Structure formats: structure tokens, C-alpha cells
Length: 565
Image 1 (spheres, rainbow, N blue to C red):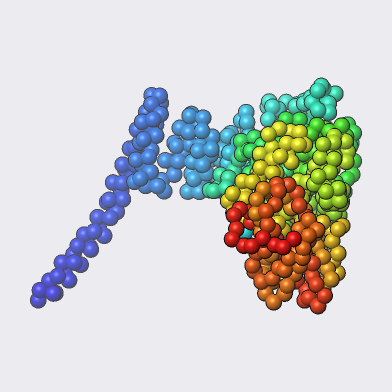
Image 2 (image 1 turned 120 degrees about the vertical axis):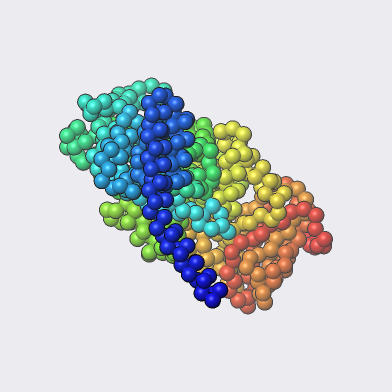
């Protein structure tokens, strides 16, 4: 009997609760309506803080009530916070897709005096303009996970900021080389806006504005819209590379690069402060030439100035930008298709990026490697070119920085650039020594096998030309491979990765040796003077083929006996 009464009592409670639920919902909705009305009255009276407080109270009661977000958007607009206003109106349209007020306010915020400097990915579906979105993938170091950053850029007819009521084109002065004067002006009435996502969250920040003339304004009746979108897309990726791979302060999240597509002027481009002027855009260029020009000027924009040289141009940061950013583009193509550069699939991914045919990026990288990296290796790190200011010295400095990337990866190259105390070539060689000293203090330093001096090495199988360095370095019987290496003052040791197991190699340092190198054990180089040295690995007769990944250098006190040199 007691159990039966308990069941009946529980059922009665359920019926009462079910009956009271609609009443509770009605009371909650009435309370929300009251809070929204009070918020509006407070806003009209000028007390926006109290008005927002009422809306936040309403939000806690019923987060799915659309009018809360329309009033929040209004208050955020009054306070000048466009991103929060857009986010509120976006939430309003999620809950009530046909809300005309929300759509009108979003359109107003997009097309008022400034195009939005910040957006959220979720807002793009409500944007009055069309966007293309993509993910840029970078790997900060060889051992790190791939990072993905969202990029987005506009498509279609968009008028640039400054065209009041679309009354007429904007006019921009074109600076002379080096920004020392003005050589003319050009008119623009179209723009492509490009955004990059912050590392965490869905916020997008305006990073690139590509201006161009419409078909009617063009002197040749040309349609540059597709080219402007490609340039914006590539520039956004270069921004992600500079921030994600090198952490360059010059390529900060808050800077906006303005790119101007000019029909006049000599074929080429010029960077000045936060502007890039691309000249003679009506002339056909191969896709890789467009990539090279954008990467070159982005190098001047994002990398520290490196000069001042007498030729071929005052600062080497442009050509270094070509090398570093195009290498990163090749590396990303390999990441995207999960097949490292220069695989057929990764090269096809680059073709798809530009979208109109074969992109000879591998050939472009091979030329840079031959002209710069191999020049530095051939001349050696102690060459007199380090103190020169001519063309060869220019290429030599670029080659030195390319070798640092090939030998040690992004982190040490970034440290080299950041530790240079000035912009003279000597400052960057000094920056490298300081970067090595700092890295050695943290532990071992990796010297990738692909940074070998190919001209002084003797290999049965030529390495593959990878994105950053030569890959698949192998030693067969009778082969030898040579590397320049910078060592600090004191004892040093070397080991090879992966471990050699049953195979034994001969190691020479500065021509002295051989020292037996086997297993995964390190071999002592004894006490070394600070400076550049030469390491050689030799595979003796009868040796099985050995695949080399890296030489790992350790400095500091060691218990190993000094070698008998």
C-alpha cells in the first residue's frame, strides 16, 4: 500500500509540473520582453551600460529570443564596436533568417566609411558580399604539428573605401623607386579584401586590400578581377607563412597591406611602407612570375631590410622573400596532399592554387638554389664576399640565409633575422653566430643532411630537391658528403640520425681523421675553436647504403676521450 501511494504521489507531481511548465515559460518570456523594453528606454535616455545589463539578464533567461540580439547590435554600434555588432546581428539572423532589420544593419556595417577590419567566420554566410575561404597550413618546425589558419577574400564587384557614394574612382600617387618621390598617379574603382584568421577562435582580421581598375576604367578594357583575387589569395598565404613559420614582427596581425594593380609603369613591382605597386598588370606573365613578384615584394614588407647593396637592388630581403616564401608554398602543397614536394600531386596542388595552368615553381626554386645557396657553398662561409656590396655579395647573403634554413630550419633562421643588430650584411652573419650560441645553450643543434655542399660531395645517387633542402641524402660504398658547420669555442661531438646500427662510417673534421662513427653514439671532435669548420662523412668500401637525416652537434664539456688527430 505504501509503495502504491508513493507512485501515485510521484505521478501527481509530474502532472502538476507538466501543467505548470507552459506557465513558467510564459512568465520567462514576459520577463525577457520587459527587460528588452527597459533596455531600449535606458538606451534612449543615454545610459548604454544599464541598457546592456538588462539585455545580458534577458540573455541568461532566454538565449534564443531574437530581439535581444537586435538590441545588442544596436548598442554595440552606438559604442563603435563593429565586430560585436556584426556578431549580434549574425546571431539574430541565425534565429530569424528573414529579419530585414538585421540584414540592413549588416549591410550598413560592411559598406559604411570602412570595410570591416574584423569579422567572424560564422558571419560570412550573412555578408552582403561573396567570400572564398580556404585553410593555410604551416609547420613551425620539423617536429611540430601542422597549424591551420583560415584565409578569406572577397569576390565580385566591390567599391573601395574612399569612393563616397560611389561617385568616382579613388586616385593614388605612385612613388618612385625607394619612395623618394612621386612619378605619377593611377585611378582605382574596385577592390578585393583579404582576411586571415587569428591562431585561435574564428575571428578574421583584414590583412590585404588589392585595388584595381574596372573593365570600364581600364585603358585596355581588361577584367582584372580574377587576377586581383589570386594575388590576394597568395598574399594571405605569405602572411601566414611569415607569422606562423618565422614569427616575424614586421608581418603583424594589425598591419594592412595595400596592393595597387597599375596598368602603367615598367613591368615589375615596388614596395613602399604598407603599399605594393604592381606595374604593367595588363602584360601577360607566367604564373610563376606572378608568384615570384608577390613573394619578392612581400619579402621587402615582412623581412628586415638587408643591405645596402650597389646592385642588383639596395636590399636583399626581396630575393630572400622569394626563396623563403616560395619554399613554404611548396612545402604546404606537400602537406595538403600528404605527399612531400616535389611529388606530382604536390605540384598539381600548386597548379590548382593559381588556377590557369602549369606553375613552374620547382624550376623557380632550382634557379634560386643555384644562384644563391650553391654560390654561398662554393665560396665558403669565410669568403670575402661577406664584406662586399656588389651583385655577388648580394646573392651570397641570400644564399647564406637559405643555407641557415636548409641546415637548421625555421626557428634558427628566425632567430638569425631577429638577432641581427642592424641592416648591414655583417649584422646578419653576426645574428647567425648569436643564434647558434643561444641554441647551443639549450642543447644539441641539428644540421640537416640536406644542407650538404653538393659540389664538394661525391654521391652515387643525387639527392632530391625538396622544399627547403636537398632530401633523401644517401651514402653508398665509396661516397663522401661534406658540410660546413659553425662550432663554438670548446669541446664538441657529432652523432648521426637515424642511428647507423651495423654500419660504420668514417668522420673527418677539417681534413683530419678518420674517426669511426657507428651506432647511435656520438663521436668527440675534441676542443674546437669558435668559427667555421668542415665535416665529412665517408662510406668505406663494402659499406651498405646509408640514409642520412641529420648530423646532431653537441657542444660543452664531455667525458668522451679526445680523438687521436
